[in-house]
Image 1 (cartoon, rainbow, N blue to C red):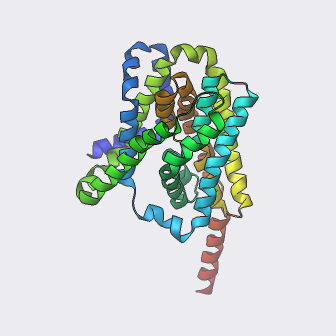
Image 2 (cartoon, one colour):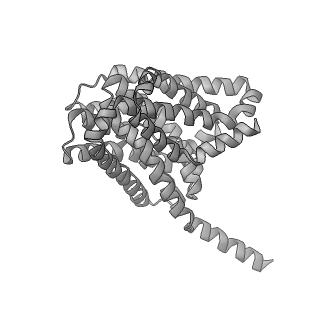
Image 3 (cartoon, rainbow, N blue to C red):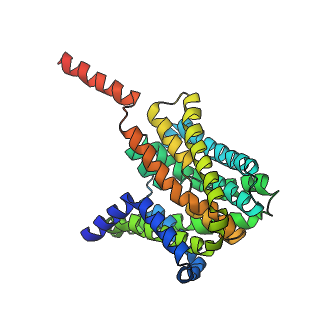
Length: 325
């Protein structure tokens, strides 16, 4: 088990490298990975089941004890990202499928990888986890509704069908994970350390499947889609931080909200785009899975070297106490 835990930790730390390698391999040799497309929904369900295994009641406590940062963060999540996606798709005049796919990426909730990035960035991890959980639970309603409003001009959006897909792919697996955690706590405690490894493998397979299906499209549309995802992610990180500042939140909260808003659940975007639009519409989410796991660690590393006001205040308080003693 310790060996698996070590491998799991290594895979989590180097996730971005593995995602890039998987995408390159599937692009160069697509045929072996084409059949994997049939398992995308199941694989994402496995990832969400793992999330359910690790969620605890304390993760939702912040929603009730200090709701303003959580509500502000989730509000930004479901406004900044969809609206900037719509603006970028319009500005770059993306083809209909790519435009709808980019807006879909903007409409999905935050991804779990952001929690790790917030920890590394010395942000408010409790807020990050609460935002991920809350935005994920809102996804069955928020994602189809916003997508219908913004992307309906490019492709037909069946909001009811998408609602059912999100319930099946996210809510039910998370609920099952919570039930297993509740009734088999010892088993979960022994195996939870390898959950990140399973999630990494599942996401890698999803990336390879969609990249293989889009091997021809990557050559023709890959660059413009990357530019769109790059701008979209940058806008999310930037607006998330400064709009959180506008809510007069402290530095650790602003860092958490920035990373939560900027890093989307790309796996869900891939699954929904493949099921309801086309493999081409999933391309923005594939690029998102790659780029978010590069930009996130970069920003987290920069912030990790900068103290927060909260940390500075705590240091001053400790010094005063030491002097007083």
